[in-house]
Amino acid sequence: MNGSRETTSAVPDLSASAWDKRWREKNTGWDLGGVTPALIEWVKAHPVSKSAVLVPGCGSGYDAHYLAKQGADTVALDFSPSALAHARSLHPDSRVRWLEQDVTRLAFDAAFDLVWEYTCFVALHPHQREAYLAGLARALRPGGRYLGMVFQAVPNPDQGPPFQVDPDDFRALLERVFTVERILVPAPHSIKPRRGSEIWFEVCRAP
Ligand SMILES: C[S@@+](CC[C@H](N)C(=O)[O-])C[C@H]1O[C@@H](n2cnc3c(N)ncnc32)[C@H](O)[C@@H]1O
Picture 1: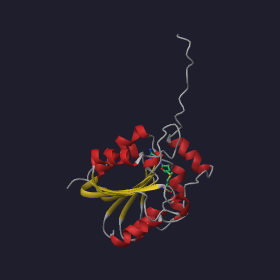
Picture 2: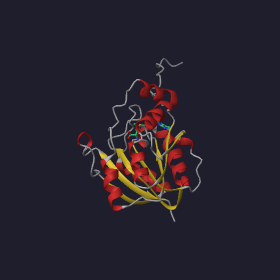
Picture 3: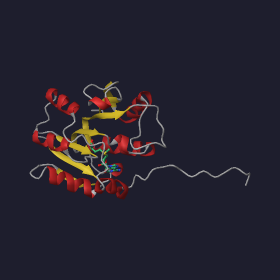
Picture 4: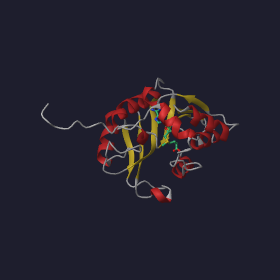
C-alpha cells in the first residue's frame, strides 16, 4: 500500500427493490400527479390513434393511460411492483398493458411505432444508458420515433437520480443509435419549476 486512503463508491442503489421502496414510502417527488403537458402538446400535432406505443419507466401511469385514451395500443413498463400496483389502481379501466420489466433489458423486436418517456432515461445510471437506448432502438419499427425530455446540467454521476445530461453529450449518445429529428434546449412546455432545465428530444430509428 502507498498510504493513500481507499475511497468507497458513491453509486446509489438503483435496483428494483430500491425503487420499490421509494414507491412504498411515497418518496415520489418527481410525480406530476397528471399527464406531462409537453406530451399533450405533441399529441395535438401527432395523433397516436392505432399506434403501438411503449412507455418505459411509467411510474403512476398518467402518460401511458393518456396515450391509451387517445387510441394508442399502449404498453407501459416499470420494474417496481408497487409503481405498477399504484398505476393500476389510479387507472382501473385503462387499456394499457402494465408490465413488470427492467428497461435496460428490453427484448422487444420492431414492435412499436413510438416510445414516449419522461424521467426514465435520467433515472438510469450513465453506464446503463447505452443498453437502454439500444433496447429502445430494437423495440421500434424502422422509422419509429422515440421522444421525451431529460434534465440538463453539468453531469455528476455521483449525484442522482436524476442523472442529468450535458446537451452535446446527449446528442452524441443519441446519434450513435438514432437519427436525430429535433433537440430543443430548453424544452418548451416544461412545468414551471423545471422550466429552462429540460431538453426535449425527438429521434427515430432509421427507416
Ligand atoms: C423518476 S420515476 C418517473 C416515473 C414517470 N415516468 C413520471 O414521470 O412520473 C422513474 C421510474 O422508472 C422506474 N425505473 C427506474 N429504473 C428502472 C429500470 N431499470 N427498469 C424499469 N423501471 C425503472 C422507477 O421504478 C420509477 O417508477
